[in-house]
Amino acid sequence: MTVQMRPRVKYVIGPDGSPLTIADLPPPNTKRWVIRRKAEVVAAVRGGLLSLEEACERYTLSVDEFLNWQAAIDKHGLAGLRTTWIQHYREG
Image (tube, rainbow, N blue to C red; front, side, top):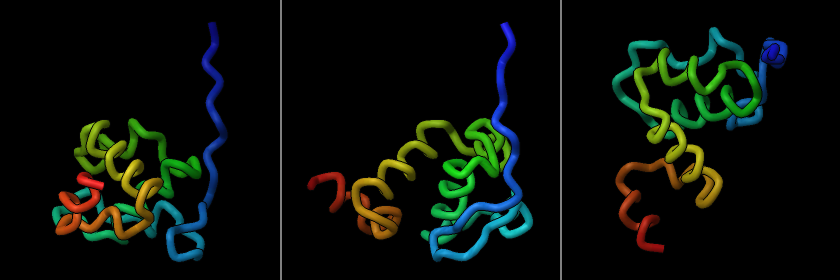
């Protein structure tokens, strides 16, 4: 059985509407995850710039952590990624 891979894209549209390339992504040693950086990583995975596995390895994320970021964006938009509001959004 052969596994078909999607061809790697050169850029995706980032959360602010501008093109986002691998070079524009947060550095692999990022420790401070602000909303914009989380949203850029989610956009990169959704657009095919990185695979989920590559993103988790590059940023030392668990799959659950990444999926939580993605779900927060889907449910509440970028504001859902704000760490100070996590409890508020989880209640609603």
